[in-house]
Amino acid sequence: MTQRAKVDGQPAFVLHAHPYSETSLLIDLFSRDHGRVAVLARGARRPRSLMRGILQAFQPLEVGWAGRGEVHTLIRAEWQGGQAPLSGKALFCGYYLNELLINLLPRQDPHSHLFAIYGETLRRFAGGAHESDLRCFERALLQELGYGLTLATDVDGQPVDEQAAYAYEIERGPVRLAAAGASPLAVSGRTLTDLARADFSDPRSLAEAKQLMRVLIGHYTGGKALASRRIFRELQELS
Image 1 (tube, rainbow, N blue to C red):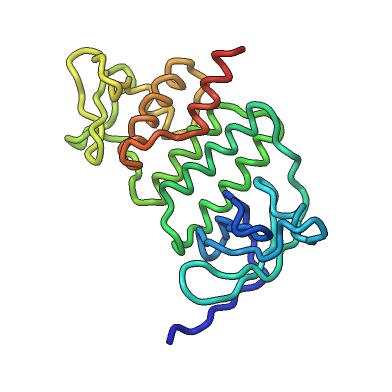
Image 2: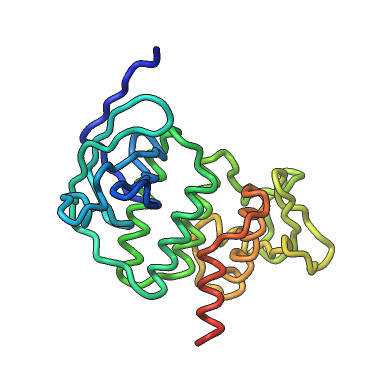
């Protein structure tokens, strides 16, 4: 018989929650020491439930759970404060981060460093979301999952030349080109070095890094369309 697990005092964020029965919620948590965990919050939808107003996305929590199998029972959740609510563009960027984690991060796979980066990114979003923050998080996520980008050298082991043009080959690295290409994976050497040092002050580097990361994430998610990206694009078109 599988031993009943019990965890308490665990920092966590809600990634996603949806109704389960008439009174409960099934929640996807991102925890510091246990990674992504599924928990059942019994009675959390009842009007007088103490958890009803606590289990919100993008807010730091301290939680406890117990149980066997893939879905555990949430036994405690306390709001830790210190995080301003997200709104507007920052809110959609937050949902984008959550979708990335849900689609790429395996369950029960601890990533404490990524957890710290996620929390810091949300705090930065509270002051205004910037594309550079998204690129940094995407790069950190791929690195944590073992899909780290090769940015300092090309596939031949030569240092990346900022003045040269490259095609980035997935799971190999940059291939130097004789001239700039039109491929979604075509980038300048400057973009590769800027991505390595998280410097997106050059608009070209920011635009090329966005396209490169989009193709890479599409590859590792199996081409799955992300709802947050689609909704944000539609809202931009309406405005």
